[in-house]
Length: 84
Image (tube, rainbow, N blue to C red; front, side, top):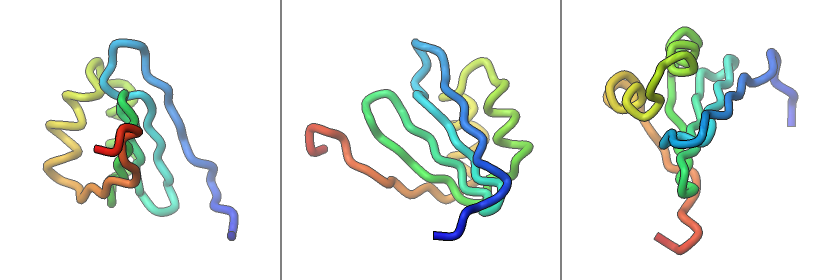
């Protein structure tokens, strides 16, 4: 596999948030969001400035619902541990 540069940006979110972690790959503009409970989605064509705005938002879940999900294609990349 060819390494990608620059390195992915990652942010762990505080307890109580619906979002466990977010990553953004600036080479592909794919943003990966892992929610508490284990669901992980990749959102395509997310510009770095939107990722930065998400990082600094007070409510990550609200930001995703209002500014990411309606405007970017999402792909679920894993299943919940209990098989759902």
